[in-house]
Amino acid sequence: LDGEIGPNAAANVLLQAMAYQPYARNATLCTTGSLPLDAELAMDTAAWNDKFLCLSGPELLRVEAGRGAGDDDEGVLDSKFEQLRQYVKQWSMNYEGDRKGTGLTTPVLVRKSRRPPSEFDGVVARSGVRILFQTTNTGDRYKSATEERKEENERSGVGGTGAKKPASANKVKPIMVKARKEGGVEVLVEKTTSGNIRIRARRCNMDSKTTVKEMSEEVIVRSLNKAVEAWVKARDVAGF
Image (cartoon, rainbow, N blue to C red; front, side):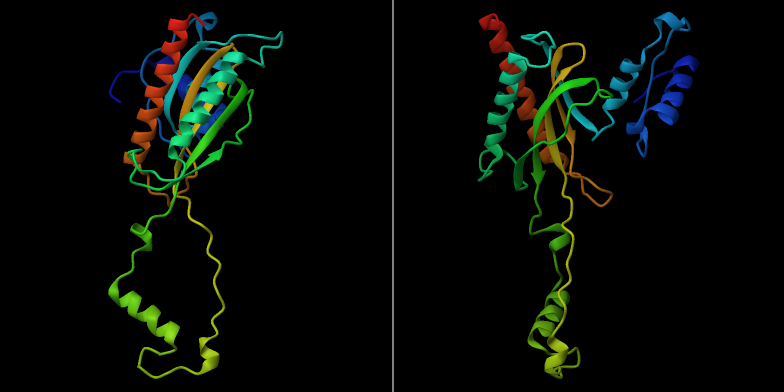
């Protein structure tokens, strides 16, 4: 990101990042632009929270789907939200089972998202899916010829000198290894406190050792964006 930033904007962003925004912790961000000095024109708390929300994951895609239907007085139950939620669920089924034809080079599992609504995120209703990348036969699972011979000798009870080990030496206690986090894309359908419906895609199932699978992420995000745009266009044509 290349651009200028005004002193008031820089001061406020630093204040928010250091004191008020949990998503800014252990994150790298860039900001440009300016903020008015007039306090009445300044951004409110909800606006700041929404700006920093993109750091959660981080966010890969955001598509606004317009105003909700507002079927009830509370504004939580919403037919438009429910229809889009079901649409995304059906879209995600393309990635279940055989990934042939999806464009993915990485095997995946599709699971329901358990991320709840959040007043801090400005979300009153939330639903979605997690497309989780799975371990492949390459990368960290690759073993050299020397490592394979060593494992074979250990299984057959032969030591490094070629002498057969005593039977007691073969009884090795199995080591429980915690499954690695291979990354994934979480797709969320959300109704905001302002009554708008939106789709967000964010990285999930990550830790410090996860290798980012940018090509697979791009395939999923591009497909999602195309599907949601088609859904919004179809509703506009139908007059909903």
